[in-house]
Image (cartoon, rainbow, N blue to C red):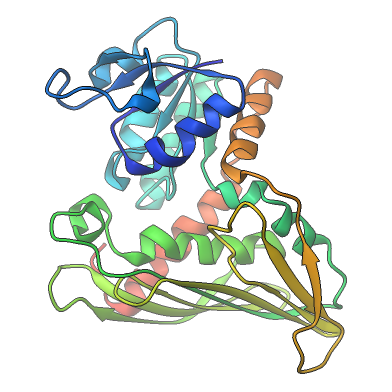
Length: 313
């Protein structure tokens, strides 16, 4: 499959473009906001440099990867779908439900495939956790934090959909979606605002699913780099040490009870970005319908958390 890349995001250069190439596909075009000002990074090899609009309308491209800032996910994904391209778009796909409804309509009308780039869904550790028998799930706890980003970074700008709630809170909510059934209700949410920027620096929230399972999470953009996910069941517990950005070889723990480390599970080496790309290509070629179920839950939950915590929407 021939891919075009929208923009010059770090995640594209360091993770998704290498994954596309490793999966045996081609990056033939790169759309830049200001083409011609500096050479393309080496990862793009012989890709043709162009602007956003020309990239979207390039007839030789089969699929477009959209890692633009959050506020540009929906408008440029809609343009790509309307141009007959399959779209792999970075998370979170939408800033509000209204945007998401417009995107869903565009995907349905175009007949092409849209997929939100949650690479965690492709990792074996999450498949293992979804099938682990530790009794009835009762509660889960998710923590993800990283150090403060420099001034000018899009993560610090509200108008671009910045802040840790959008950036990494979406992973927390998704973790509940992958384990629990139905749509959650936000029980509580508290935000601590940044001392330097207009965004929040930390959000703590609790959600409850229809069968009573709860998810409590902390996400921060001004703390030490850290990740952890724990789930408690009626007959045991399980823990992922690095739930979102695991190393090539990672491990998890589980137990039927007790205060010790538990049983260790070692997962085979893998690149979950490559697995995601392979799944995206397979589904797009097989004529799968775009599925926005998780996207709706995550978007609505984020907006509800914003309202409860008093954040700008």
